Length: 253
Image (cartoon, rainbow, N blue to C red; front, side):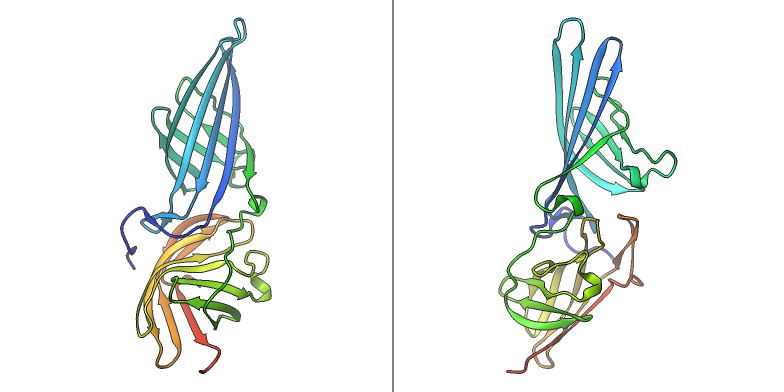
């Protein structure tokens, strides 16, 4: 199934922020690169689109003089690394230790001569950052069931949020976690972005569409779901367990 919506679509209020830092000594100068990655819910072609800001410093040991070069751009997670371009710094690539199958140390690579490359120190920033859990909302709307979990569906806001996640989801999902954000038209179509969750990983957004039926109190969403290797999303498949989302209304007015 092809990705839905325009490239760079905004998918929700989910936020995640982390940094990678490396230092290097060359020719009597100490170089430092600090890359800050921020995810605020943007999606491009079904993949999470991160904002990256890079600051490169070079300090002369003899004079103490420091030069600074900064740049910003977009980055994506692919093949185990966060890669992007931050003009005028240029290319930036970070492989975390968990994805470094050769050395298990990780690597920050910034080819610009004003920057440092090397084994990175990675730090999570913000509330809930150590486990990269999504922000939560106050669930509103009406109660539905989805795959053993209780959720609230609110057509006025276009949000589906967990109210009582089933036990197997609780390491990654908590009450108020947003499962879907988009457009919900009772008796009509549903289109937007769903999220797949895995403990210790950022939510994986992917486009879905379906039918919201008031007549038989059912909502069905379909979309090629993310396939992970570790935390990395390596592809999307209609055979993914996340590709079919079915909801049943709990109460009858």
